[in-house]
Image (cartoon, rainbow, N blue to C red; front, side, top):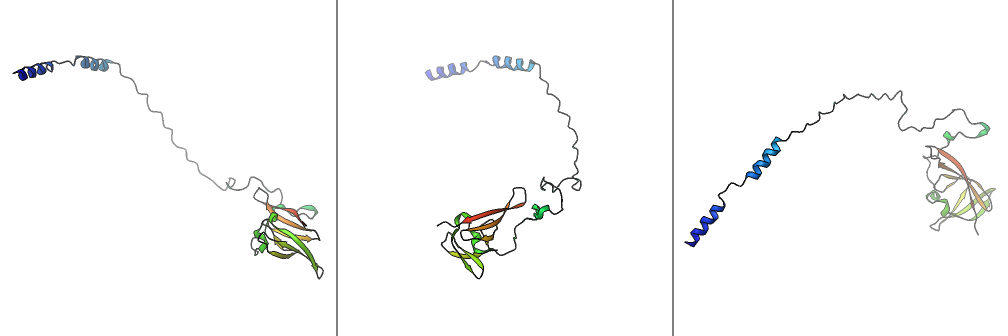
Length: 172
């Protein structure tokens, strides 16, 4: 019997409709003035661009324009005519930078001077005027007893090439 009394008491606590606060809140929210959504922006039509390459500068061409095609005065070569011979076979000493090559001696045979060059691998090679050494297309122009004069062809930084003179000195 006590169990029955407890069940009735519990059920009587669930009997009331205490949703008045919720109903009041919902009514208040519904009575608020509704906001306005701004209209969508006007979409302008796309304007097509026609690329006419004939009238425009090439996109990958250099900004620098050659001023003349006439040969240079005083016997100087035109800078645009300077370029390395990429077709010729490479010589063994062209694999090494000039800083790693050492002159170990010179010798003269039949009115021609030769130089002895030691590579970083310890191999001594004999070279003469016209041979190439170093990684910058260095051609031997002159061999003296104590030095070798080279003409190198290096990039000028403007999509071209330039010549520069280099001297290797015999170190004892």
